[in-house]
Image (cartoon, rainbow, N blue to C red; front, side, top):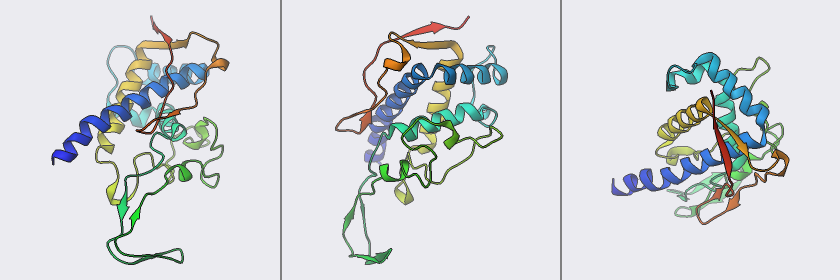
Amino acid sequence: MVSSAWNLFCAGTETTSSTLRHSLLLMMKHPDVQERVQREIDEVVGQDRWPSIEDRQRLPYTDAVIHEVQRSMDLAPIAVPHKTMCDTEYNGYVIPKGNGLVPPLSSVRIDPKWWKNPDCFDLENFLNEEGQFKKNDAFVAFGMGKRVCLAEALARTELFLFFTSLLQHFTFKAMVPPEELDTTPTNSSFGRIPRTYECYAIPRI
């Protein structure tokens, strides 16, 4: 219980804040995407109330943007360590009982069999031809299996509410031309985090 509570406060704070910072960086890099997100929020939510989690189903473009931010930034390249509880055979390989395993999640997030343009920020990865949100089984931003992220539901809710609320009230612009922005995450002891940047947060009147 103590370990789980620590993970929720410490690991959860860093992952959510890093993802939000990277999402704003990508909105400055792609102002057309930012404008379309704001237009969708204006049409569905308006300016008279705050977004709620119930709005997610009616904001497919915004939901796709959040998912593609997570996929493209590859925040946690590897999953938490696992261990085989018994001798296990997988794809012709025998993994003896007690062996430690570290699933490389990055390999799934950039697999061209699952993603149209895995090396680019491409919303078609999560939007169908009708512009509706589509799920992809290769989206493993929160890990996989029984040891999936403990706070996945909380993190998804936080990211959606914070991102939509920020874009509802502000337009984010870079202090340099968008084409000069480097959106490649940097490696840290924790994972892949966004680069430091400065921006203008312009209130939407």
